Length: 258
Ligand code: C5P
Image (cartoon, rainbow, N blue to C red; front, side, top):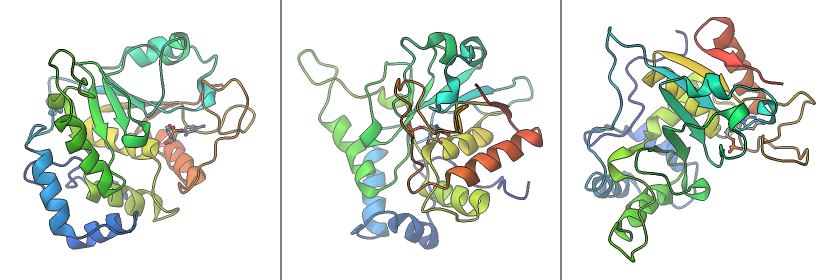
């Protein structure tokens, strides 16, 4: 509870609020982004396309929303977690984490695909897109990708069902950096932010595929060669320590893999 802020809005809505301070933090992740007005204009275009209220399941005393957040760590290899993952109501997969050929270890259902343009892939009609806008261009990309595609025969198919798209609030990204990681690293990894997002959207969070593999390497589960995955601008160890702490305190269930 030291870190969790109940009042934070994790997703942009048609009626979002973005403080100058949070906007300034977000603007520093990139170079040359104009100003808050420019952001507002783009957001307006976005909400002419996607729902003004993001498609999330609201809390209810009659339902426990269970979520699996599946990172891409090599510790999923030979884990046999597939069934456990698929049992959750929602399954969040990140970037290029695929299931085909890995079902035994990572499961086969995907209800939410977390992405940004560089890691984007076409989604089927029933999968939610969760866009993490690391830069202004990511928001413009969302507008352009829908404007230049259509379901009409012979046209370039839309990247996702536009009614299933949700966009993470820049202030939420700042909150994760400040409140959960004490501003370590340049900004949090997509995976870590997805875990915190799930804490805000779900009642029970199961976390798979985070951290190093059994040999201490930060690999991906699909890489045959044991190539070291670098945590880059993200504070990889601080993130993993926080994930372990959350698990120790019973706030998430962490599956460490093999
Ligand atoms: O590599 P990629 O960013 O697509 O992986 C998705 C997320 O999975 C990362 O953002 C990171 O949080 C997590 N990950 C991890 N350990 C690895 C690989 C990925 O914790 N070895």
